[in-house]
Length: 187
Image (cartoon, rainbow, N blue to C red; front, side, top):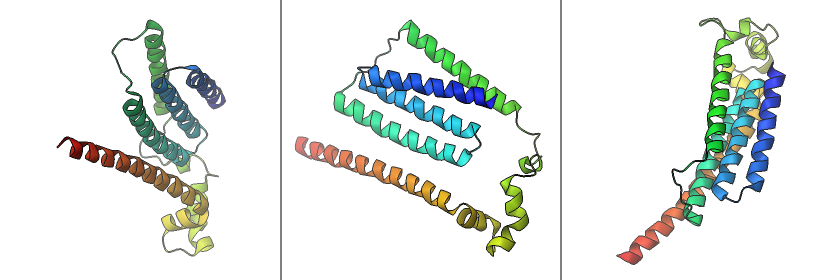
């Protein structure tokens, strides 16, 4: 079932990429690229990589906010309330599909209070708990996991997050300077 869902999301990402390439409206292209990122984040969740999914979602949200802000400000794109029937139908269908996905994911959760690692005996968490102190010599099991077992992964995630934050700050700072200059000119 997981392979089928991943296939559906990959098909969705291909369609969104084609829309992003073929549309003449810049804002629609940015939203289509955002849909690709959200679908990729869900695929990461499906293959069992929640840390990568969270990082993907954070970077996606930050980049979408920056790109939409730059698009609306730069192109003076007017957003009106008119919607075509086809676009509304697709939106409702996608919302329904995400609702079904969320319902299926919620139904597959273990009973409250039962740790997930007790269901999978070969889970990495069991290795971390059983032999983490002996193998790493750390005084804290969380530290041994983050710095010893998953050190490169943690370094990559932190690098991506700091790069996204610095990029957002750089763009917002330029906008703030321009806004301040325009305000000083009018006074």
